[in-house]
Length: 410
Image 1 (tube, rainbow, N blue to C red):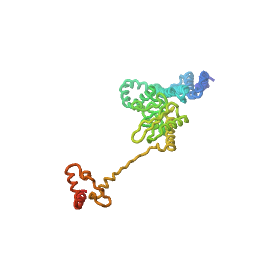
Image 2 (image 1 turned 30 degrees about the horizontal axis):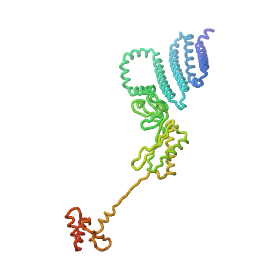
Image 3 (image 1 turned 90 degrees about the horizontal axis):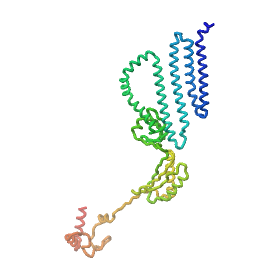
């Protein structure tokens, strides 16, 4: 009877080990949930670790069962080696699941759905990056541990350690850019320069920080585009962070109006608009004339809001309301362009009209002056006066000759 049971004994032992592993994993999960029953978020996140915990416990039980029942068999060494590699993978999977549970529990205790969420966003950014770094380390350690289970690789490792200095230099030069981005990502996470959900202006684009990884940062732009930048961009290039300390911001609305703009009426209208909207946070609401040159007066309205999105909507509301108010009630205040055109008609008539003898009859003839010196035909010197007297003498030929000389000059 014992001889018949001998070949089947390892399989029976493995089956019992699997049942024991499943029962132990169920018991451990129930115990942990009972001890933390005041944390409802743990109920949902604990499901992540259910499968790796079962797998790890079952593999441990199977290895122990095979060692007790088939330790002297020739095939035991190969099977045990495979089970060891599987166990290393299961333990790594379980460690990653535990990291995810810890992250979820911490983030649920610090919600970002509050008015002042700066601390929560900072913690969220640091936890996400720390979890990613830890997951990368767990994977590297698991792969390295699995490789060390092979005797050939162990012998190779001794030779590799001898040239580790040269390999590290070559690897550092080859991955210089990637390593710089990795260290820049860690710097961003733990120096609090930017956080997830921060409002930033980068490369003249307005958006929110959507994701921070070890090598790049994803910015969700206002028009639903995604701007992906390397982590080094935020450590080497200046950028605007509108929620670095607080989310409250201020903005301006400017108008170039006519000098007849009703400033007091506009102030009254501004107070009415701000009082009737929830976008205004009641901190700042000012209307001032900031410039008065170039034929216009510049009126600036300064308003404040709880965040940048509300500020944009508030500025648009104030601008539209003020434009409508001026169009309907004070159209004279709208900007006007003034042009003034002058024409010297007297000079043109003097150039075109023929000169006549003083005192001559006919239409358009001007009366002769009482004194030739006051005629203003020739003035400025004694010679001019003499020429004036010559023209005042009798004879029409003198005037005709004068007209011909003037015509030839023109």
